[in-house]
Length: 288
Image (cartoon, rainbow, N blue to C red; front, side):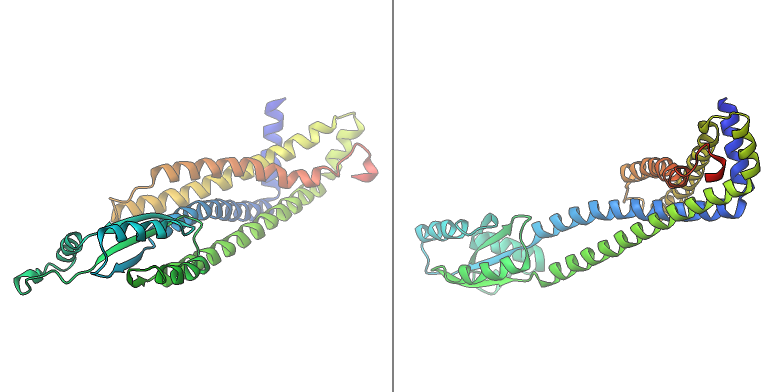
């Protein structure tokens, strides 16, 4: 019986060649966009958290501030919400950092170190532009703080672009998913209309409803698997090409996970799309 179901499903696909081809292409695009949306969601969240961790505000301290006052300044900073970490940079640390960044040693000319002491602040992942704009005035009011230096506008601008891009990808994923369902629905209707006399005969001789429905659902699975294999081929070829030019960047685990999602979505979306139409099938000839 299984052989009959499989053979019949292949015959159904080949009978409606154009509709099957369009369904495969649309399914492929749908699967690509869905996995792309999931990947973008994961990566954008990871990028967002990473970039937010890199946002720093530097507080430069007056030279007149004593060691005890430095401790009080740190305590005042930690009282502010959303500040995760406070790092202290002494004049000596600032001097070493200056040399690492510029390669110049100003002590060849100057007898004293003109660089100020400072605190470098980092934030929780819940930080946003509005919160920082409220935090900065609080930092400026702390006694002993000479200057507050920050540059976070570019980071949040890039994060806004990522968020907008994520919305666009989600829209396309939804659009192609609905389109693939519609085309699979139309494919089922076309296949059934072409084989209506045969199905009517089968029902007259007492064929079970499953004998008609199962080959259709199996055809959807086959279309979905073909679409998923197309997606796997496209992504793997692109990744292999990428590794050829950039061998140090490897995303093997992400590619393996994407391949798994391609197959899973292909197996699910194919029969689900066709299944919408098979609900209308009954053993009553006049309703078929």
